[in-house]
Length: 171
Image (cartoon, one colour):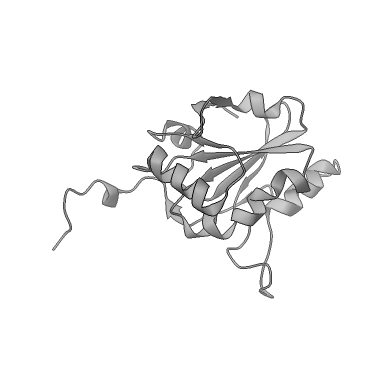
C-alpha cells in the first residue's frame, strides 16, 4: 500500500508508518464531515481504540472542498476522538483508488492490503438485515486466519464530483 504523509486537522503530521509503529495494524478510513454514513459511524470510530487496543485508526478527510474549519467544527460538535488527517487536494484518495466515503483499508504490518471496502451494509446494528464487513475482517486478522471477504464494494458520498465544480446551478 502506498505511504501517506498528511497534515493532521488539529495539528502535526501523520503518516501510515507512524500509525503502524508498535501496533499490529492500522485501519485507514476515508471520511467526510458531511457524509451521513460517516456520521452514523461516529460512536464506532470514537470507541475503536478502546475496542481494538492492538490497532490504530487513522481517518483521512479527502472530500473536495471540505475545509479544515468544517472538519474542526464537526470534531467539536460531534465530540470526535479519532485522529483525522487532511487530504486537501484528494491526491491520497486518488492514489488509493478511493472515490467515496466511508471506505476503509486494513493492511498488515508490511503494508500489504488485507481488507478494502465498506464498514457494513449501511444499516444500523439493530436492524435484522445488518451485516458487518470490517469487524469480521479485523477479527480474522487478529486471530491469524484468512479474511473471508477481503473486498466489499463501498458506496455513499463522493469524494470528487463534477457537481462540486459547477459555477452555478443548472436550470
